[in-house]
Amino acid sequence: MIRQVFVVIYEHRHGMDVSAHASHAEAYAAVAGIARTWWKDDRADRSAPEDCSALSDEAVVEAYFEGNEREFYTLSESKVDFPD
Image 1 (spheres, rainbow, N blue to C red):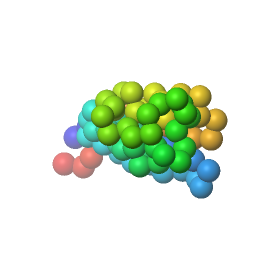
Image 2 (tube, one colour):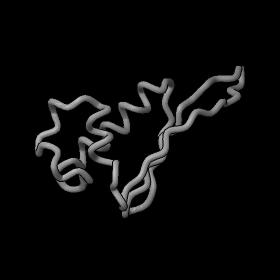
Image 3 (spheres, rainbow, N blue to C red):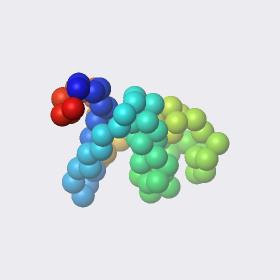
């Protein structure tokens, strides 16, 4: 059975983290979770509010990663053939 998966690759100063998700929404939520976790220390947009709890996932991801020269993410779709 072939299934679609969404892979997040998060590159940072300590290495790389990789995770797989069942939907694009879950994968993007994982990226937003990364941004929220490290928000106070590493957000690229220093004009963004110090508390990100009221921001949407899209706003958090954009403010955190846009222009960030030390951290990057890739979200890609892949198909995996699982045995029946």
